[in-house]
Figure 1 (cartoon, helix red, strand yellow):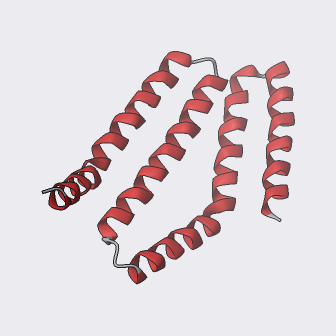
Figure 2 (tube, rainbow, N blue to C red; figure 1 turned 90 degrees about the vertical axis):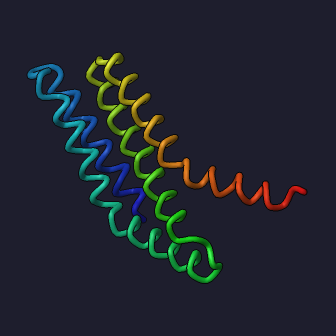
Length: 128
């Protein structure tokens, strides 16, 4: 199972980061970043498969593919934002983490406007 590999990478990275913090604290953040990148690479096939499945379902149900793409991008922004915020918090930069978090939320709001607009149009058409 993939979860065992992910947990294994996480535990090994944690051990490396703890050792680095004792001897070379300036390099500890790199261990955290590398672990995150390795985990994302390990999940890339699963992510591709999930996106393909979502696109297949959208095609079969006549859902606007533009909206599906927007939802996938929004999910990606949320995941990457959380990753960056975690790295900033790990390195003690809470102020930068907060700004990245706000930036991610603003981008998500901006990207969701076409979906909100379509929803409002649908509601207006239904109501007399």
